Image (cartoon, rainbow, N blue to C red):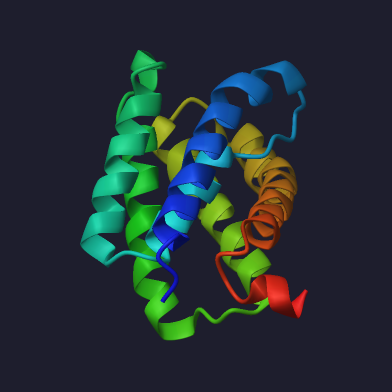
Length: 162
């Protein structure tokens, strides 16, 4: 086991959180990468489900503090994604680049589904368009960022296979 691995992971989590709050607001795109989902999934694949759920709750509550009118929706979504990702990685997760991309894509899309439904701000037609068109595009961009982090971090054997 490499002793620097936890430090590299912690470094990337800090970089992703900083990018979420500094870089993402300047992009102003309709389709945005969610750096916090990538950070949560980095934790979830390395931790037990309860730890990943608590990390998701903390990240979600922190982001919900910025939007008090929908407080709790982000915390619920992040908690479920963290728990589900950690639980699923034990059964299905391998160190394959394509499977990692699908894993991040599914995590972001699941977050959007839970968040938008729990938020209850959109009506049927707007919600359907968001979940069928914009959320998959955002999940694809987030998956590309997640794969970039995995390749650049070199924490997995993904880098040797790429």
